[in-house]
Image (cartoon, rainbow, N blue to C red):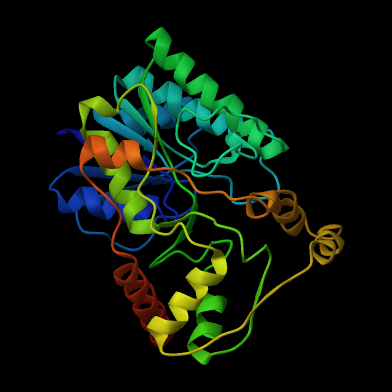
Amino acid sequence: MQGIHTIFGAGQVGTQLASILAAQGLRVRLVRRSAPGPRLPGVTWMQGDATDRSFADEACRGASVVYNCANPPDYGHWEGVLQPLYRAVREAAGRAGARLVQLDCLYMYGKPPVSPFDERTPHQPCRDKGRLREELFEELYEAHRRGDVQATSGHASDYFGPATPNAMLLRPDVYERILAGRTLYVLSDPDVPHGYSYTPDVARGLAVLGERPEAVGRPWHLPLASASTSRELLERFAARAGTTIKVRRVPLWALRTVGVFSSLVSAIADMSYQWDVPYVPDDGDFRRTFGIGPTPLDEAIDATLADHRATKAAA
């Protein structure tokens, strides 16, 4: 879709999305509250507060598509922060007459009764974060039904990939231990099937939702890279790295003890139920409708490890 593409949120998905769109020859604005990041070819940085109506309107002016990839920096404190942010972006996109593509998670499903689960699975949030995501999900599609904004959303599971340091399982410190063949200590049950998304696939999926007319008016599960257990995925990383590893779980009671002193750890412990039951999103609707699947897993793993090595060498 031609015209300006405005992205709110310059984190690990928004930045990769900006590069993908710019490589397609599109005009891209990348918006963040803090100072602009490094130069990205074809991307114009904008700095400001999305909850400031005048700034949000300026960022969306002339946009054909607006992508909301923004999230509060403090995972432990979403209440009262996420709502005004998402509402401001949604309303600004509507005033601009732009399509809104919302990056979203899976928290609103709670504990799915079956796995894999698709977009028609009932939402049964069982934690505060899930209830908050469900509230904003309903607001988004109610605004779409009223005609306030043309909306769609792309939902992804836990991430891994290049330039993706903020992840539950696969983080830079974990890659270091994999490359060294050391024991890994994970914060969840490693032997339950769990979906993992490759960050470049998530960004490419959002770009598709911004382009294709059939994307509008409903949520989509973005292409899924891995549906194995966490242990199997970690061992596959090790095999590609030429090492062997052991995987051990940090007890939940230990997480909750540390959580007394850390809001981040407390929030992680609260959401750990996602690894206690099979938790694999079904991306079949996206694949069938758009003809696009995930990057082959070994290719994704190799690119992730290569990026980690390069980042470490440049530090």
